[in-house]
Length: 341
Image 1 (spheres, helix red, strand yellow):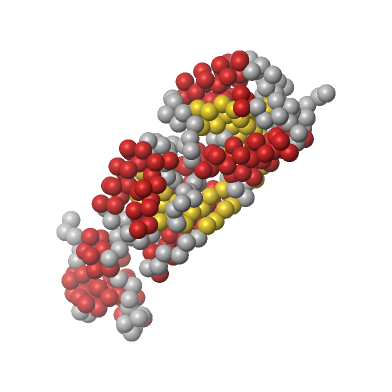
Image 2 (cartoon, one colour):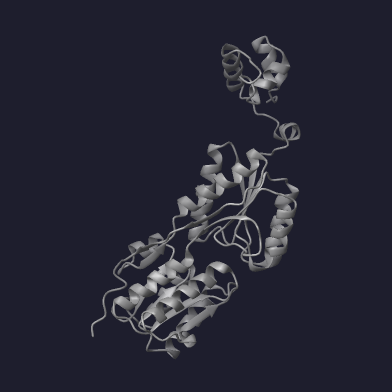
């Protein structure tokens, strides 16, 4: 089928190619073209299944109407849902999103960022790896529209949208303590990323403020690069080495899923033998028996805020630094019953 051109629409509507171009670029009213002519051109474009040449349009406007999104792992529950929200929100404003996973690997993260830069995205939403600080600083220096999501760098003057991670961990451990748990473990990732550091600090402070000893031996750090089977094995070994643990806070849903498998393998019963709270909610935690208590992140708010801050930068051609820190929601289910003295 022959591609429909502006000339075809002009011929069918009896107006000039210039008038058609102005209308289909959304500038009809601004250029004082009558509503009748605008409607006539738009109807004909729809009837002929007109599709604009995006490359030519980007040369004229300086915009590609595309956003680049880099997350750790698109298959992860949190990032999958966040990506969906970002896509839906961007679509409302006529933008499409190109998704990339860094798999928390420094080399891959830099490579996918280079690909997005080469494709000249209008703006970037990035959950950065620990080693991406130089790349982020370069984007800031070049005044690229940019919003960091889920985590940020304290030394980078970039906008970001994140969770109050300290509060999420603090509230979890505080609840454990008030339920009578004494030996509360933390299973987290081995990383310098600020969101995990804040969760660690919240865990530690809640123990101290509840007059429970902070014991480094009850903190298990697992590499991001560990595959699922290895994570399960590491958690099993950790629990065997510390049989007095009566509660665990998992700092991500991936760790939580592996942790539940480890507990099952060790024939430890959630709620009866050990209390469990996990960061991030998903269907598995909600439908499990017993249901798993979680620190739920406001994924919809994170995605919407990030997109709108980014589009403000793009549309206004001005980088205004904005920091949004959203509150977590501790959802209590059956995995954290009160302990019997």
